[in-house]
Image 1 (cartoon, rainbow, N blue to C red):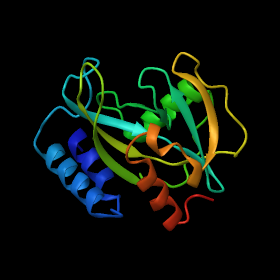
Image 2: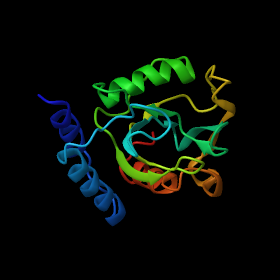
Image 3: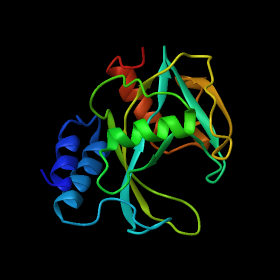
Image 4: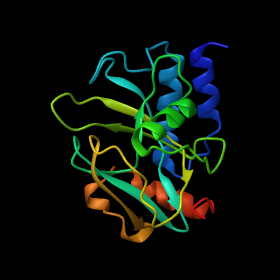
Length: 182
């Protein structure tokens, strides 16, 4: 199976929750089928559209977010997918690096997909697969302090929506609707 076929199969596992996610999913499927390079090969923005795996840690209506140093936003952990790497393997690798813990997937498939333009000197588009992980609300892992100023748990309703990924509120709504927030 080609790498593009592997990614296309992963995208087919996602059930869009709204028209925006359907649009992002359609664009992502078209992009994968186009033959474009899917993974970042040179930081920060080559190619200008590339795969990312987010792995929000959730528990009982709470989400763990980090005050991300380079973006200045409260973000769920995540990382760029390496060439040839399965996005779930990215989650496993990055979870060990950023949170120093093993990934406990809440489900086998990605729960959400977004395409977002990044901010900063080298804007580009991240095609992000969101894989929720099971955590323990209140317990903050030994996170990478080179990546985050601090980390903390937020109730879904109290997440800092003005200072986070613009899709986080939709993601949390989808989790709640699908009962994956337990």
